[in-house]
Image 1 (cartoon, rainbow, N blue to C red):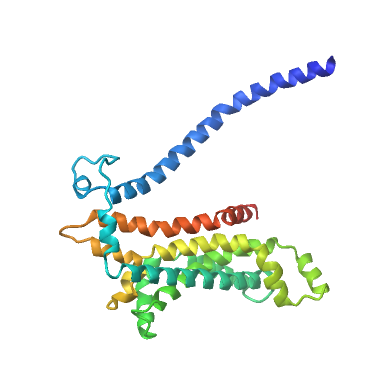
Image 2: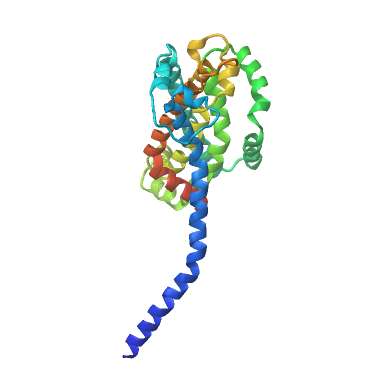
Length: 293
């Protein structure tokens, strides 16, 4: 009987504690939903405007719905002769930047974490300082640099700067993942006869893969949505332009085609969403590992 009474008492206490915690939890959930709605509303309005007829888009009384959805804006987007070329260029630039920056950052993070050498701390501080420099301040120097190397109007003028800007963040983030791998694991691999190269690619690389995915998302988004470099370095050869430049086709100062702009923006967003879906699980584990470290 004593056991039953103590259990009943325990059952009576727990609901009280839960009821005390519920208001705070409910407030946190409500705040999270509000923030999520604020973040998602621009995306909703973009997709909605892409399906709206021209009359509703230009109306002085905008409504958050449409009763006459149409695909005319998407037809104008895909009817552009160079749109497919822009899309392919964006894919090439983004893929090269993601792969190159991930590999270079992995090797650099391993070097600054596992090896002792002079000016190592200074090098890490330089990485951090480089991340703080605004991109706009370096656009003109980069323009002259690309001109001197003869890379203007080429995809390399977009690939190289994005790799350079992605590396500081990627190295700093991957440094925590590499540091979290015990040195005893490396020593055990060497005792078993594994070479440094084999340990690097067959043992260490899979362990820090979630961190590589997290840094790759940052590199992909910054490269895919880039407009500044594409506008500055691609001057005369339109065939080397990327997808953000396609928005200029529909934006005219005297009569902008807002339906075309929204439809093109929607098409641009789809690859980002697909990329997020593909790397979602590893991205969550990678960010969790980074915070834990």
